[in-house]
Image (cartoon, rainbow, N blue to C red; front, side):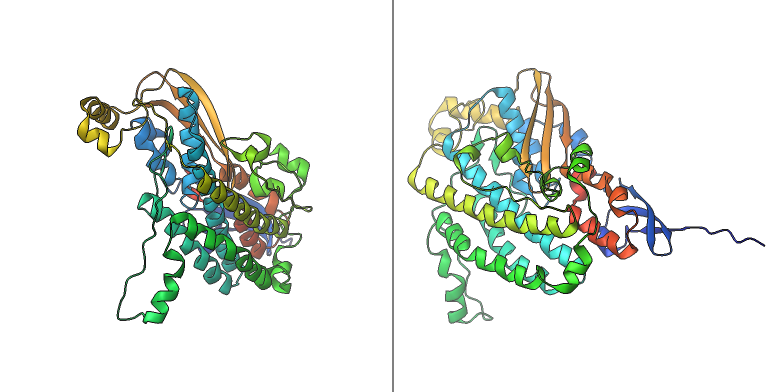
Length: 418
């Protein structure tokens, strides 16, 4: 009597902690070796692209924040760039530097969350607590400029919503904090937001050293990531990978250098690349990117200190008037009313704008029919392409390696299930 060998088919997620709640992965296993991996998406029901077609342009900025909800301002950036392309408007240089500074703050925030959750998925507990310590400081920067700790809606067509504040909020006295502890917490909050960010930048490289001490030469971490999920440079290009996934395979492709936008061509920074295209190289690339982002932020701080100026275009059909003008000028009041009820009207046409998002290329394809709402909005997310390669990356690896590979992709389902 002959025995037929059959593969096991198992569900990995959505309840699995490493599936992050909204990925169903159907794995076909030969023992513990992955034969097939079939990602099932569509459990999030976000519908961003369709919702955007029924809202005025400026109402959709908040939807962008909520797509990849750990890279909020970078999502906004691609969207407002697309609007500005169709309007054929140039943003004031100070607004460009503010945007670039916050793009890089967002990149560090993204990589810190990725680092903590990647290590946690592989069984390293402490790194998560270390990474969130610094992330909390950067969230305070978001709060200082927008009032919101995550979904900022800070970038606007034609610039940013307001200039950088001259003061930071201080921690207040409570029965649970001693005066000595309170003084230590408020030590770097006595000046402006730029002072606060500068003090963060001076300390941050030593914090990255701490993460590296915990992981980079850690024997167990290397066993879990070296030679796992390898993809060659040619193959990565052919399947459409971007960002750290592509650079981890040795391809120095970065939109900030190859297709510069805003003021990136004025700044000095390197593009870190890997060699082997495995999970470990992707980790090293992201660690190096945090250091480079820190340098970019320092250059922006230096420039912003020396160059005051407008932070939005002086066009009443695009930017709202100041509060003073609104209360003293009838024409300004009319413009304000029209902007906040009807919104911006774009000329008919189509455009594509892309930014170097922390996860790769984030593109916005925008079609206007001449009205105040998008006729069509199509998002080109970074994570969707990377997730589509999951089967190829996992084949021949063990079940436990699926977690390491999936985590190394750095996917967020808000942008995948749009």
